[in-house]
Figure 1 (tube, rainbow, N blue to C red):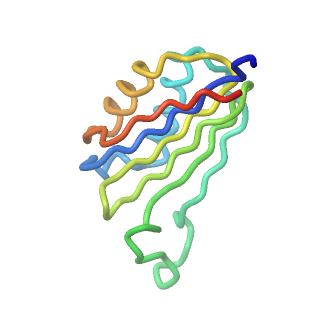
Figure 2 (spheres, rainbow, N blue to C red):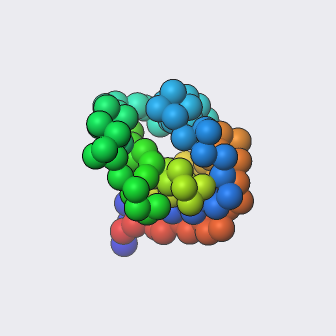
Length: 123
């Protein structure tokens, strides 16, 4: 059976939540895609940036920014959790990429400690 691609699942804890801005996340996607040689397509955001203060989330598992960067070969998804100081990242692509470059780039942009890094081969 042929290898279809891979999915990298990264969990970072004790990150710097001041770095969870749209600008920094956009720069992260730009740098990551350049370094792992992925072609960027659409980028979509989920957060409460323009939500009235009284309607903003307060649950620590929901306060943060999520984004999906579509790439020509699939997608990169990020979830940042401000209160918990965590980043959850998934990279899925049918094109091979260097997981260690992805890990280093994630650490560079958000600090923190990689608590889990799992690479799954897709068939």
